[in-house]
Structures are given as C-alpha cells and as structure tokens.
Image 1 (spheres, rainbow, N blue to C red):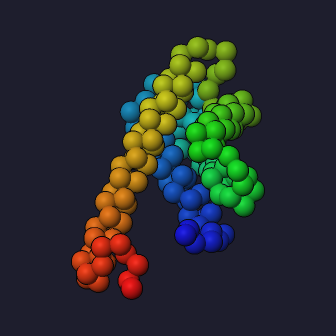
Image 2 (image 1 turned 180 degrees about the vertical axis):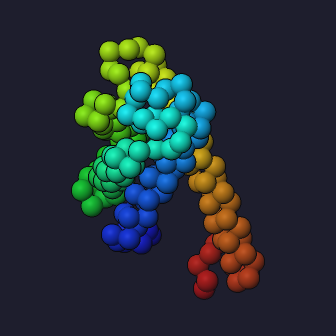
Amino acid sequence: MERRKTIFDFLAQVLCIFGFTMLLLSLFCLLFGASARGYSSIFALGAEGIPIAVAWEYLLLSVCIAGARYLFFTDRIIRQMALWLRTALMLGTVLLLLVLFILAFDWFPVNHWRPWALFLLCFGLSFVGSLLAMALKERLENRQLEAALRRMQEKGGDKNGCGH
C-alpha cells in the first residue's frame, strides 16, 4: 500500500524536475551558449549562464509538470485508467506544456525548423531515458521485495507465508 502523498512530496517532485532541467540547461549553455546568444532567450547570456527570468519560467514549468504527474499518476482524481493511457496522456500533456512555454516565453524562434527538430530529439531522448530509469528502478525494487519475502519465509519456516 502506497503512503498518502503530501505537499512536501509535490514540492520535492517540483524541485527534482527543476534541478534536472537546470543542470541540462547549464550544460547546454556551456556547449552552445556562445553560438546561440541572441537566437534564444534561454541563451541570452551566452555561455555565461541562464537568465533569471528563464529560471523562473522553468520553475513554473516544473510546477505544471509535477501537477500533471499528480493528476495522471495518483488515484485521487483519476480512479480507473490503464497505466499505458495515463502515460500517454501525461506525455501529451508535457509536450503541450512545453510547446506553450516555448511560444509564450520565446525560448527559440518558432518559424525555424532546426530548433523544433532539436527540441523533439531532446524530448524523445529524455522520455526514453526516463522510461529506462523507471524500468531499472522497478526491477531493483522488485528484487528487494522478493529478497525480503524469501527472508521472511525462511525466518518463519512457513512456505505459504501465512505464519500459522
């Protein structure tokens, strides 16, 4: 049984998303900032860093993504929905949020194809990376639970796990 989530769980999720995106943006600024200066509000400072306004925009985006995660992956709001459908809806929502933020905050010129292609490539790679990380985490947790169950069964000497 999963424990009840609190506002602190939500805030931790927001900060985790925000921290990861800031780390990636910092890396992108170091790698591409000098050549992208003037091309995007994200790279307004070139390789020197991320503008404060952009950091606040990404914090707001992180809140929105964490809210979407809460909506689709807790049973408080949506009670009966297949995991694949929740995942697909979450993916679509995050993609829509990103497009809205790109348009609203002028993160890159929307009339050029190259930034859109790079955005979709980065989004796809991030999604695949997230899926792999989640699958690995689940596999490790399942192994830990199986090992704990074996220890309990060995300790109790009971093969059916009833304890009687």
